[in-house]
Length: 485
Image 1 (cartoon, rainbow, N blue to C red):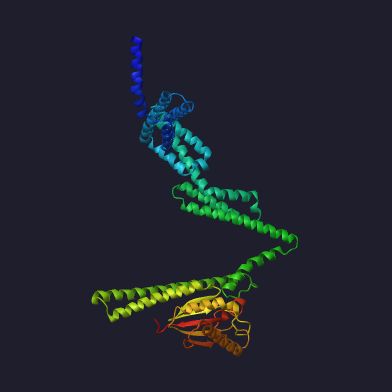
Image 2: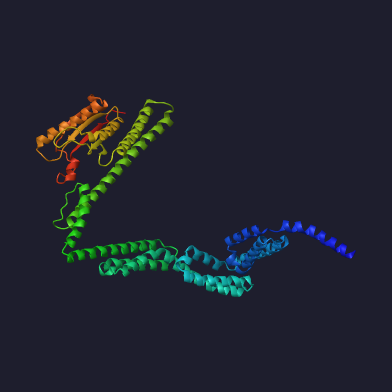
């Protein structure tokens, strides 16, 4: 009878306790997810032993479940893991309070990518850090603080190495390869410059590891110098080998330097000569660049003046509206001026965008707009527009359509080849041909178009170079806006 009673008690306790256990604890999968969350919270480094116990319990629970063991055994392992994980959180919270400095230092080293760029120093520093965390986990705070102080020094060293590695390693590798290739034999000065800039960059980081802008600039210069030195060494070695073979290597090298300068000069319509060295041509190119910069500043000033004029007109409109209210003839007139300026700027921008730099140049000339056609093709000495110019002429028609009320003056220009009288006649014939093309092909109003030839009298470039002469052979369409819009 007593055995039957005991069996009833056991069954009752099992039925009563089973659901409560399942309801109050995690399952194996939930524990595994909680473990990963704990790792994200750095519990594995702030409470390493306790977190390791939680991981072991989680793995045991997973194995028990896979083997089909009883739910009670799986639940027991899960409870162990859950308890260890909770204890790890408590230990980690304590560490964050008492060992905050070394934890912050470790984070700084990670940000500096110390594990990547300072693997040995990082391994040593991190091992000392974990020792401090284990001492704290054991409740020995004095020893934990002692190990933390040691770890902080090591972590700062690893952080510094990491910062240097991230900024300097590429330059270091380039210089090392240059040394291996014996670049100093042919380009010692440039390679030495690379090494000097690298050393200065390292000194900057040593001086202030948290303000590395100047160090990055110096490292970039070191990388450039190292690559430049390598290139120079390759070229010099090649030239010397050609000289040994009597192939004119040095001459070829100097000519290769002059060639790009000649191309730049041609684009600028300058006629440069190297018969007295490179100083004169370089001076001429520099002066031209300064002139262009000055012209750019002038154009910017002009643009700003026009914008200020528009702003002033808008200001007058606002004052009129506030003073008079509603419509007035004066306000309407001012509004028309503002709208006309806005339309003109938009139209000019549209025209500029439609032509390539080889086809035409668009600019303001007083109150007029000039479309200077360099891409229009005539046979040499003739005034017949070639079929290849049809797409360009279509763009011209579209540009002129933006100013339906304007008068158009077509100017013909030639280079200086040939006699003055022949060029004057040829330029007039070509201007007339363009007018006739616009009238016959696009239905332009002949009464609003006039043409004139100037021959070689108005060059825009030198006639000493082929590129300059090509620029001078042009048709200028002057869109006369006075009295329109």
